[in-house]
Length: 122
Image (tube, rainbow, N blue to C red):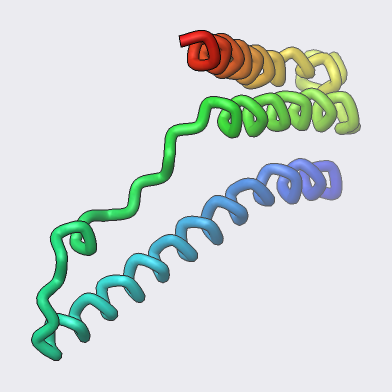
């Protein structure tokens, strides 16, 4: 039973983080709508820009760094986890799974760098 506790805790942490972030965004949206309703009840004319959802600026560099960090984290996690698979091989042999987000992040970083260079010249 103890051999399941560590992987469960490790795998549930990202899920909890995502749930916390989603709840925070939901509460922000609800507070924004309440404020808009209060302004509308007072008879204030709302500009159309206030009715639009705020958009997060697209940022390849940020996305790249998050993916690179996630890939390195997966690699470190699999290398550090004790235990064995059903076929007798160690879990540490799964470290290659982290290469997917790592390489994707490096691709985003390269794209950001190349686009930035194009903006400087252009």
